[in-house]
Amino acid sequence: TGHPGCDQSFLSTMTGLDGLMDSARDFVACNHMRSIKFFLESLNLDDNLEQVCPFTSYACDYASILAGLCLKCDTEPCVEMGINADKMRTKLKNGKKNSLYLITSGEELDNHYCSHSYILSIALGPNADRVKGSLYLNLYGTNGQSTEQTEIAHKNSFGPRMYFSNSAAFETELESVDYVKFMWTLEERDLRKQYMDVEYIQVQVGDDQESVRFCSSENKLKEGTRYKFERC
Image 1 (tube, rainbow, N blue to C red):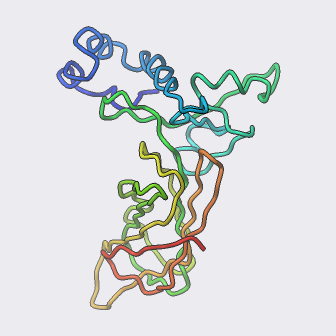
Image 2: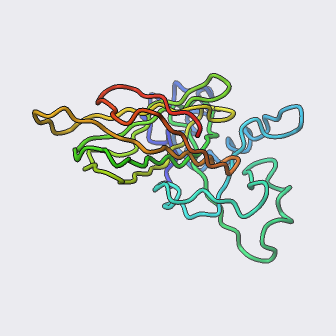
């Protein structure tokens, strides 16, 4: 599998954070060298000897994770890739091959590879107009951090009671999702004023296996405006 950032140009890799010799090695064998860097990042531990950023791994096939169909763990807690993986040996299926998958970052070549995976879903309400457009979400954490805007549906046809879902992985640590902001854009316009109605937004958090629903009292959402949805 090609890792994020391993498709960088020769010049970009040479001017990275690791110095000339290590950067040259990265350019030649970037994908293989990531395993070492993953493990080194997992050595960042807090006062309780827990990974600062857990490389949470899932009992799903990789395609299902990317499609936003699966983020399940077969153990409690979830298996973490890296220094803490050895602690989970007794909880995995003894004598059987265990295949676990996760999404990593690294596009910016900043030696930060751990990411937090989510499944983001939007359920349209009964008053949603039949239009074609795109849906977007931002997540806001209890620690004051927020994620970049994520597209949930791209140039889709929308209508009442439709449901859209997508996967997302962020380097940003949110601690816990406090609220979300929703926005939609219109692809095809006509003379009518058109509105979106969102019944709820569902956020499935991979790290702690939590699923949270968010709602808004407004049911006539204008195009291009951000609306805040709170836990419900």
